[in-house]
Image 1 (cartoon, rainbow, N blue to C red):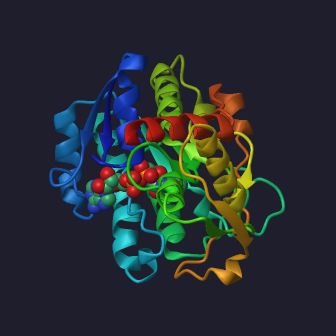
Image 2: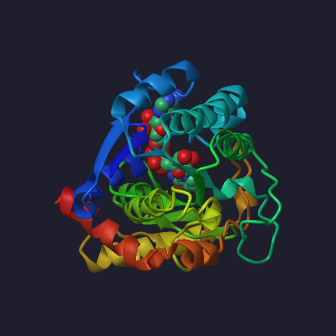
Image 3: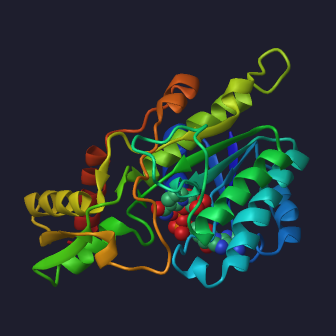
Length: 300
Ligand SMILES: NC(=O)C1=CN([C@@H]2O[C@H](COP(=O)(O)OP(=O)(O)OC[C@H]3O[C@@H](n4cnc5c(N)ncnc54)[C@H](O)[C@@H]3O)[C@@H](O)[C@H]2O)C=CC1
């Protein structure tokens, strides 16, 4: 299987590249300048050149706070840009696996969100990603939209790397404790994306076509936590392995104002992905420990 993934430097892109050999697949990363989601006319030629069996739409405008001051650019990249990727996959005649987010919800529900719960983004980033979901579904019926959350990896910028960096110089830090969610390893996302992509490809001809494999799925690490508990867990794992450690003082979202509002409940229910695609991501603590061990080894 030959996978073309959008973006070059992203956490999910890097993870797909790393996991390719393990799964016996080829991953071609297609990013700027050849493919620029802000310039939809670049998308089809760049993806066609990669001659894929599957397109993975992982590139996005991911600066959640900055999106509040440049919503049009976020919308162009995450909405129209995502639609152009799905349309290009359709033109090439292959399925698309598109990554979306917990931020399509308002976070007011008191249980993990299911795929058919009403969306209602509370910020520009979430609105742009919801536009992207709609554009992808409209452009290519052969799609799986995987909503994930709280992504971390040994690559790029993420919460675990920030905690370890800040923890190296401070004894105590404050972290919000009233936002719940499911930390998700980009390397686990890569494994899941490949499994889902294989299922889509295997069910493409008339005899094997299975509509249940298409649509929206929730895909996060198993279990759930809040940011303060996530931070404490990071430091206790790090300390056990001789890495940085800091005390975590839980605070409320009201005490830590940011330009973009975030959903208080970001938990996603992954039951459908397990039932339909046979894919369950590992417990967030296990993958968190794996990521920290790699980061500490790289820093040693
Ligand atoms: N990071 C997170 O916590 C979460 C991420 N997601 C989604 O998962 C997907 C992957 O996220 P990450 O790998 O963490 O993102 P990332 O921020 O690490 O990487 C984003 C990638 O998109 C590329 N990109 C940005 N603008 C572009 C443009 N105009 N044209 C072409 N490429 C462009 C960047 O160069 C980079 O390679 C994204 O769709 C994101 O919305 C969903 C939920 C949470």
